Each structure stands twice: as C-alpha cells, then as structure tokens.
Length: 554
Image 1 (cartoon, rainbow, N blue to C red):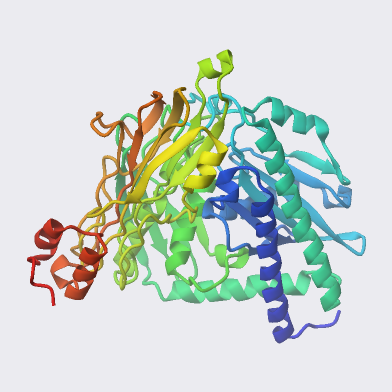
Image 2 (spheres, rainbow, N blue to C red; image 1 turned 180 degrees about the vertical axis):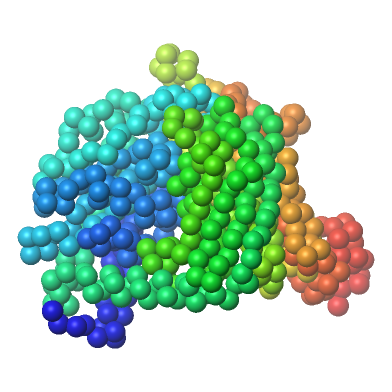
C-alpha cells in the first residue's frame, strides 16, 4: 500500500468537507417541510467502513449531527456489510437509536467504489407529522406519539420500499410532505455517495483507510491537547428548569482528567409523565457540543474529536429516559444541557464561558382542530421555530433572536403563511429583554400569529425560561423571562401544553433574553448609546441598569 503524504491527506480532508456540505444542501433544496427547507433542521455526514464519522455538513443541529455519529454505528452493526448492495439505504426513527424523538428520520447508505463498500453516507431531518398525538408534550408514552420505524431497509438495490412509504403516508396528517421529505433524505445520501466515489476516483485511492485514520487521529490528538489546558478537577452545577407542571432539577458533575472528560447527570430529577423526557443520546449530543464550543472549537467535529468525551446518567433520570416514556419534546430540556454544563465549566475556565441564554427553541407545532378534520375544514400540520437571545460572551454582547445551542434558523413569515392558514401579524425584537452587563445579553422577540381563516387551530407548546430566567455571570443581570398568552390582555399561559387558538384571537409569544456578563456599570458608554439609538434598550433601562441619564451620552 502506497503511503499518502500528510499534505495530500489534508487536501483530501478539505475535499471531504466540501462533499458533505453539498450533501446537506441537497437535502435542504429538495425538502418539502419548512422546518427543513427554511430552518435547516438537518444533519449530513460521511463515515468510514467502521462507521466512524469523518465529516459533517456545517448546516445542521448538534441534536441531529452528534446523535447521527452514534446511530450509524448501530446500523452498521445491525446490517452485515457483506450483505449490502449498490443502492441500498437503511432507515430508522427509533428515538433511542436516532435523534431522540419519532419525528426525526435517519438514513444510512453504503458507498460502493470498485464494487465494494468503502464507507457510508448518512443524514437526518425532521418530518412534520407521524400521527398519534403528534408533536407536543401530551403523550403518556412513546406509542402515543406516532409511528416508530425500527431499523430497516428503505431502499433495496435502488428500489424504494413502496409498502413502507405507504405506511408512513397513511399514518400522517401531512402525507405528501412526509413522502417528499423522505425522498429528499434519499437524495441527500445519494449525493454524498456519488461525490465521495468521484473524489476517490480523482485522488486515485481504493479505500478511505489512510484518510480516515489521519482525520480521526489528528482530531483526537488536537482535542486531547485542548483538554490538557483545562484545569483538572471535579466541577458541579445544578439548573432549575420549568418542567411541565412543576420545576425540574438538572444536575451535572464534570470531571476533567489529562486526556478525557466525563459528564455525569447523577442527581437529576426523574422522568416526567409528559413528553419532555430526553434519551441519553440526545442529552449527550448537546452536552458534548457545548463543551466542544469552548474546548478545541477550531477542531472539526468527527469521531476523533468526540472520542475524549463521555456522558453518563442514572437510567430513569429525565436526561437518560428509558423506553417507552414519551419523548416528543425532548429538545425542551435537552437544549438546556449546555447551560447546565457551562455552570460547571465556568468554574474551570471563568473567562471563556458565556452567560446563560434562552437556549430552548420556542418550538410551536400547529395543526387543525378535530372538527376541521371531521367537517371538511382546512387540514394542516406545521412546526414553527423561534429563538430567544443568547447569553453575553466574554468579550461581546449576546446575539439577539439567535438559536444556541440548536443553530436552527427562525421560521420566516412568508413561507409560514404560504404553507398553512396562519397569519403572522407582528414579529420584532423585544427592547430591554437582554440582561444588563459589561456585555449585554441578546434580545428575545415578540411574535403574534392568528388563524388566516374563520377556523380555530391548535398549538402544542413546550418551551422553557418562563419560570426561570437566563442567569448572568460575573455580576451580569438576568435576561427577561419568556411569556405566552392568547390576546394582549389574556392571562399568561403555562410553558407547556395543548392550547386552542380561537379564530380572531392572537397567540402571542415573547421569547426570553440572554443573561449579561460582567457588572453593568463597566459597560462602555458608547455601547449604551448605540443600544439606545438602535432601540435595543429604553431610556428607563439606561438609567436603571447603567446609571445613564438623558443628555449624559458623549
């Protein structure tokens, strides 16, 4: 075997990153559902013959990407490589194998080159509806939440399993969108497989062995070096979150050694009766992502850079939910784990960790009422996503209306109104919602929506930061709480549940702001002036939070 130079291996690595990005864009362009097409709720990646992730598309969420990194190993072990044929594609939406809830479909395709399997492509995206109680926290177990597809062959030697597709269609309120999204996933896998084979042809290699070893060993080594810069020790933190009907405690112990990190969720509350429980694969995905944002953030995400991190938790705690508990809205708490982890990490690296943010997406599944289905009304199922503010960073303000840690883009007005009978009447930033500080927290936003017809619709809410605000760090102030209500003067709604929005009434959501960092009195006066001029803070806030009187600006 000819040894490939490191320079050539690096060029090939860069090409691989381009291949996966084209793969991800193929999924987005072909998708039917707005949450995929407009918000980028996906993952795409390339894996070696052993099922190790070599590269991931930049577009995508940690909840999809880092769960995909483990899911491919499961599928690789489940289906013998020697039995795979050109054009085969495998699939599952098992929450404990794939991405944490039923609505995410994960596909894996073997890549053939010179008549043998050399690796795999994989991808995940969110399907709008899979029957049952649908996307919402009201299920009593996973069987309530829709159709589960065990690991199976979706495409056999290029022939799509028509019976399986029919099962998915008849179990959905959005059969056309689901079918289209599955074909988009197939196109994503096929694009990656085609481009990977072309790359191997161009570089005249017969397998990925040397390239994969180089990628994983280089990334692992770099990550271990980054971990070595974190002071060894054991760091603990707890975080209170809204929960469904009562607050829930999330607990973490972060143990940093010379060459690895272990995160333990021991002490976390037990599972809920409602669908906000989190499979460990999903909690791991976001926790490790948060750590990697601080520790070796410039190292590409792959099996090598993920290997030094281990996440554990007592089976049955809400961050290690066991089958068959309901998990449809697992992101509500799963996306809070970065703030939990950062409460540990700030003890070791106080100058590198941001303040707490809104974190959990304001994810709003909407659909028609039962009587609309019965009486010939307008039928639809749509999932909208909105973002709050991120926490202030050690040297910069937080980002407004920006998703961290998910990275999902907020739903846009025009595609929403074109897809479903929903009218967005107002959407704007919320002044004074970011926590005060030397660096200000990011702002939340105000969203108002109503039925575009004379029919009611249902909203399934499962959000956070309505009871517990995003805390500041190092003297920074807390962000504003989120708020939900029907009508401007209506009573506040709880953060989770199923709600009917009557025709002519308006669902109003105010997403939370991020916490500030550092004492407010140390903020640069020109930054306060800029915030005032931009309408991000009020005169009253300038006086109260920063001690600035009208006319005192430079």
